[in-house]
Image 1 (spheres, rainbow, N blue to C red):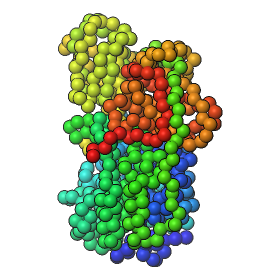
Image 2 (spheres, one colour; image 1 turned 60 degrees about the vertical axis):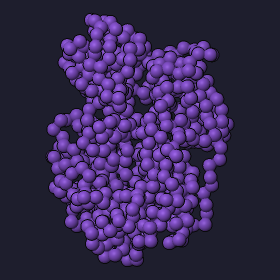
Image 3 (cartoon, one colour; image 1 turned 45 degrees about the vertical axis):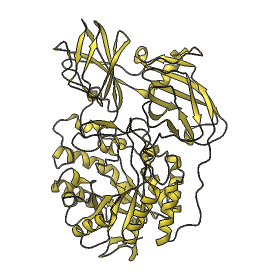
Length: 583
């Protein structure tokens, strides 16, 4: 059995100085059959440790649950890290940010308005305890002291940017210790103001998060951490993208120079991200600093290892830097080869509004407009319905996050949170239906935990509309629409909102890149798996299709198109296209 501790100058593994050369891989953003490949390529770059967050909301989609199946099998992931001969760092939050939906906090948690957020409020602590009770046994039995790979466990996450509730932090520490955690505990915060002190406790090891001005950041950290090893717990070597902006990239040589400065200073590092992966399904987060900005499906992050698992110029630049300081393996990973290309035509489609009975059932709720939480819908799409006796101007307090309005089945218009829109003209009376898309819950700042949907009061000509039917649209049941789908004309586009279907053949294994030129907005599914959101506004132009999702022979593609397409064809193309960068 091993031993890992924090010495006066170094991390110590079995008594010997150990420099942490870590890379972030979020197991929940990578198909589980690709975990071993990504971990192996981290070692080939010269890294000796893998770091991951743990998303509470994924493991606990409902109260009292803790799922560990498939892509949530953290035990398997950590075992693969160990099989590669590497160490592991686990950062369970409970808040993780990570540009992930709600920063990892379950949306169901906040249906009780008395629950606190990232604080020592008793209801919040009780829920956190339930999460940690499910998680920590997995980590504890894989600590280095028990023959496993785990050497460090983080308490909270950049907490100093949010609060300074020391009782909350102490509670997290006490729970971890009582659960059997014996590896060192640490905190990470940005090296600004009082964040490092606010986000930690005196006896916890403090680390910084930054991606530039290394000497200055380390000096700031050393003032607040007088002894022990210096560590950048998130070395930001790229950035994430929002819809409607360019694709963010950072210069490989400049990032490599900052990494060299870190290693030359004797610091340990966790490269964030080493491999970003994908926000499959509806898992992306959002930011709101006055303007709501949802994150795109790709979490490529311009990381050394691309979204689809191939080394980039940054990978080789980082490898060269690490080789100046430490031995690196001789084996080199290969670059991406072109994927199989083909065009696929959808052959049938079913209208969404006419198929709602196959996707769940409505609930009638008296009173003001409900939230999506009232329908127990915590992600994706929710349909609101009510009868209006006349037309006029309809207003909402706020829409979260995008609402399509239909009268008697015909589209009326859209209200967008991004654009700050709150009013729409309804032409006449009739059945009013509103399809609301949760575009991702805010993952940073004070809007964490907010409700989704149409925020009351919803008024028509100044009078509040009461008594709504609300239905959670279950996209897991989209396959049930295919028998009712009708054939499409060869030359026509696909009207929305609808679900279009196609079959396509796969002769050889491997990844694919789905391009939806001419389609407007929605989600694409391969063999029932939700690849994520597409949107014509970009920057992202392709969706990543992991090879393990495909089977030899026939495969099914389903496209949930919200507005309409100019074509009924899509393409599987040779390589990903994440959009133009700012250069």
